[in-house]
Structures are given as structure tokens and as C-alpha cells.
Image 1 (cartoon, each protein chain N blue to C red):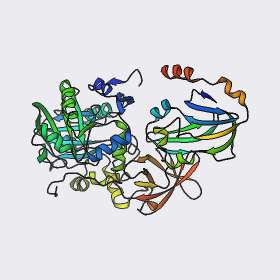
Image 2: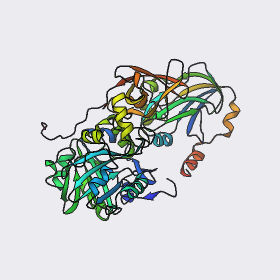
Image 3: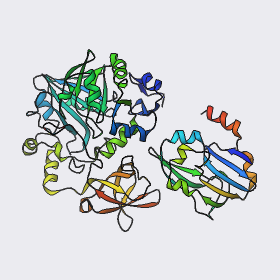
Image 4: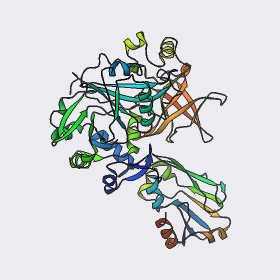
Length: 123
Length: 370
């Protein structure tokens, strides 16, 4: 298993060729109370950098971009039912979607936990 | 926060309490402390303390003040009694809304509170038009706090005895723990509550005294916005602007009966015409179906997808746990119970037109049972 982060404040947990994607604790704190989440449908092909999910807080709407390309295996329905999971457990139960990596090489440019921590401190 | 933002007297007070600061109306202001939904619910259940020191506090004095102001506002100031507040509007000659405000008769002068983002333009507008001999003073040295919620009266009367006798839309001079304060029973949340004007030099002490009361927590701009939206209260610059008239905005109550009959204020011709013949569009409340908020800027569309109106405020109601909005829609389809179609970022939403407020007002009206 490996854990990666993006500058858009997403985390990607990779096991084999399966990646689970969510937003970081830093991101949920910035968003504030999340009131709506939309996750991608199973089977959808997403390419790196394209819109994959929507997260809306009381304050604003934000897009969640696919950090890597692949085929969506599952959107987190628990999150659709209870969007506050993004605030209470962003890097656990509050995951957004899983996908099968179509280009594992895309993981190369992402940050590890230490690099991401320094990135947040510089924000 | 941008470099140019001005700093309010309670800036460090907010930061010390963990506020996240944002740029608003040219000032650095707290958007939230613990979180918008928790702060919103606290205000509806207990009492919330808001810093609204960015708003403009004006004194209009001089022998011709009443007549001079009546020439610029549609309110009946002649019958406004001592210590009474009135909601009013600054209007263009074509009835466009330049600002909405509260005006109070206070002894030999009028005290006016106007929006922060528009205060400089309002002052210029007033100074250019008020007759000679009427003096306008911008009280830059005064701060303004609001204490809102069902327990506001308990908390404030402990510090400023006598405020419990005020009824909604009245005010008076009090001492708050010895500090001279002008306190009115008014606000922008739909709850019972007070607005408290004190010298900026002592506002930190006053904020500390209020926040020490067990009923009170500081509340940011985020919850101020969601509270006023639930209360159906329009926000200047969003739901009201120079292209909207009081009748379109459903603020006909601000046009006093005598003033409507007599005229003598900007926009009277158009307003009386609109009161008789109606308007093409009207501000309404919307209950949006589903969970996703529809926000300011979303379009109201007809069956063919043509834009026929606009959402001017929208968000998630913490009390109803559902998205709500205000929009201008064609008057022909503005009746409560009807439905409208909205479009936002390429997605279609259905909404039901509902009466406002979305959450009932709980003002402390004179003569009403407690």
C-alpha cells in the first residue's frame, strides 16, 4: 500500500492497481461544514485532472478532480447519505471513490505525507 | 484577506477566539469560529454575538433633518416616535435601491445604520442632497455589536438592566456595566435580540462582558448569512441593488401610507405605478428539491431553457436541513405553491415557491405574550 497527496488536497491510497481517493483533513477544515456530496458512477472513465466529484459546504461548491486516470469501481454511497462524514473522518470513512488505475505512472509526480505536510504549512 | 483590508476594533479579539478571517465589505472580518452550522444553531437556541462594526453609523441633525430625510427616504418620519426604529431605503430617481437601512428618532436627531460596503456612497449621496443646515456625522469612533437569539434578553439584561422592557424596533440609552451604550431591540437573524452601539475604545471590554455570559458565543459572518436567509431578509448587493425596486423586492411595507399618497421622495412615480399595476418580476423564496444548494447567480429558466430570472441568494438551511434560496421570478409565476426550474453549472433543479420567512420570526413585539 502507498499513500499519495496532490496540491488540490486530495489523498490517494493505492493497493495493487486500485486507488481510493478522498480529500484531506486540511481540505475539509478549509471547506467547513459539508452539506452535499456527489460521487462518480461506477464504470465511468475519468482522466487525470478532470472533474470527478462535487463537494459543497455551507459556504461554497467545489469540484474534486481525478488525481489519476482510471475506471471508477465505486462511489462512496455512505458519503452521499451522510455528507458530514467528510468533516468527521475525511481520510477514512469519508473517502469519495475507488478506481482502477489505467496509468500507474501518473502516481510519480504526487507528494508523499511529509512533502504534503510541508506543502500545507506553506499555504 | 487582501492587503488593503481595513482592520476593525475587535480584530485581535476575533483572532484570539480562533476565528477564520476573510475580506468582506473592505474589512477583515470573522467568517466562522467553530463552524457555521454549530454557530447558526447556537444563535437559534441560545444567543450569538456578532461584530457588525463595519456598518456605517450616522447622525443626521439640524432643524430641517426630518424634512430633509423624508425627501430622500419613503418612510414616514413625521410619525416616528422617540426611540423608534424604521426600516427604510435610499432610492434613485427611478426607484432603484441604493441601500437599505435602519433609521431611529433619537432626541433632536436621527441615528441611521447603513451597510458597510455602501456607507461611503450613502454618505456622499446624503450630504449632496440634505438641505443646508442639516449636518451628517459619520460616527467612525463607534463600534456596533449584535446579540441575537432567544436567550439574548437574559444575557444582556444582566449587564444592562432595563433592556428587557424594550420591544421590537425600539431603542434607548443604557449603561452596560457602566459603559454608555445605545441599545435597540432589532437585528438580522429573525430572532429576538439587540444591537448595541458603543465607543470603539471600549468595545473589547463590552465584547468580553457579553461573551462571558453562559448563553453567549461569538458568531461569524457565515452564520449571519444563513440566519438572515432563513429569516427571508434580503442582503444588499445580492438581493437588492440599483436595478431592483422596492416593489419588485417585496419591500412594499417600507413605503409608508402617507408617503405613498403624497410622494416627495426619489422613485415615487415608479413606485406608485408599480403598487397599482404590479411589476414584471418579484423576489420570492424557494425551497429547492434535493440536497444540493443552489446559489447566487443560478438562473431561473422556462420550459425552453430561456433565462427568465435569477437566484440572488442561496444556500443550505441548517434548521430545515435543506437547500433554500431567494430569486427574482416573473410575477406571473411568483405565487406560493408554484414551481420553477433552476439551472446551475449545467444542471437542472426544481424548486417550490414558498412564503418567507423560511423559519418563523420570533421578535419580541409590544403587547405580544412572552
